[in-house]
Length: 205
Picture 1 (cartoon, rainbow, N blue to C red):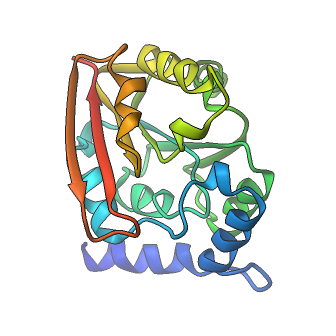
Picture 2 (tube, helix red, strand yellow):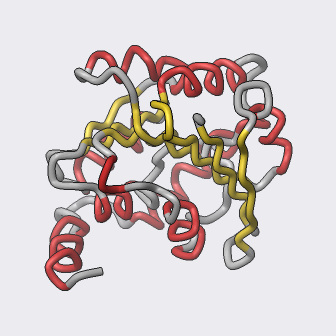
C-alpha cells in the first residue's frame, strides 16, 4: 500500500472518543445475534486479501457489501476503491450500521439498515443501475427459509456483466445457493482464519 494511502487509512480508521473497538463491537454483536454474525472472530487479513485480489478496482464505481459487521472488509474495500467510487453496506443489525457511521467518516461509504434481498432497490435508490462487485459474509445456511435464495437471485440480477459475487463462509453448503444462478464459480480455502474460510467467486460472464 503506498505511503499516502496508508496514511489516509490510518486517519479513517482512528475511531472517535467513546466508540468501542472493532473487536469489542464484534463480540457484543456475536453475543446478541450469534446466528446472524455467523463467526466467533473477524476475518483474517489473509482472507481479506485473497477474497479481494480478483477485483478490477480501476473499473469499480459501485461496490456493495452484505453483513459488514464492524467493517472488517469495509475498511480494506475503501482502501482499494477509487476516490469517485461508492461502497454501499447493508446490514439488518442497527448497532453495526450505527457503529460504521460513527467509526468510518468516509463520504464514499453509504451504510444502510435493511435486507440484502432488497439490493436492487437500494442500488437504484442511490442512482446506480448495477453494482460492479458484491461481497458477502452472511451465514447463508442459517438464514430463514427462502431468504438465502432470494438474496442470491437479487444479487445475480444486480451485478453487471464481468462483475462477481464474492462470498466468504465457513460452511461449504453455501455453494447450493450459488449454483442455481451462476455457472462460473471459483473456489479457494484460506486456512489462516478462525475458523478456516471457504472463499467463493461467482462471476457474471
